[in-house]
Length: 188
Image 1 (cartoon, one colour):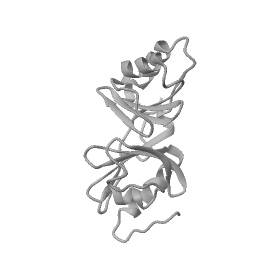
Image 2 (cartoon, helix red, strand yellow; image 1 turned 180 degrees about the vertical axis):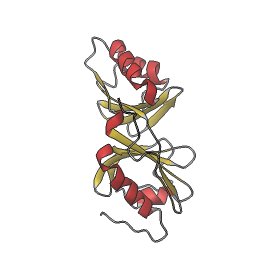
Image 3 (cartoon, one colour; image 1 turned 180 degrees about the horizontal axis):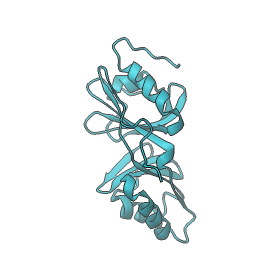
Image 4 (spheres, helix red, strand yellow; image 1 turned 60 degrees about the vertical axis):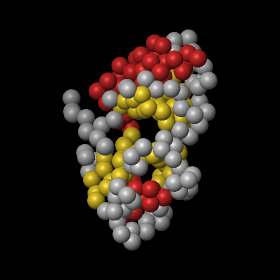
């Protein structure tokens, strides 16, 4: 059996902001009735976080929960324990119309940090990322240049961005160019 590695194996780029592959992250797509008491209890039990509001993330001692759509969440947790979390969710949601799937190896996660992090993402995403419009724990499912992505703002001003593993190199490259002085990327 081969050893698991992240999409870009820890790649990093330094400009007026730093772009880096965050390494292996456990990620679970959870579908179902987000207003259900059973769903809320299951999410709280596995992540230690409350159900997020629309276009928000919540944080708990065991993970981060992101609102993806009216019937979908993305749960980020420890990579080594992701299958256990899926099993716990499945057991806790028994009898409920719900689905929990480990999507960890199909995704890549990047961190954009530094004073220019907001500008780096704003150059690439059709989202109002002004400080007034996009606050910590705000979440958007959008695109970065020409590909689908989702991102949120952390309390420290950094962004985390999730994309499909198949486009990880492209996303890293456009983020790195966007972080360069004069690095106007446009929609490559």
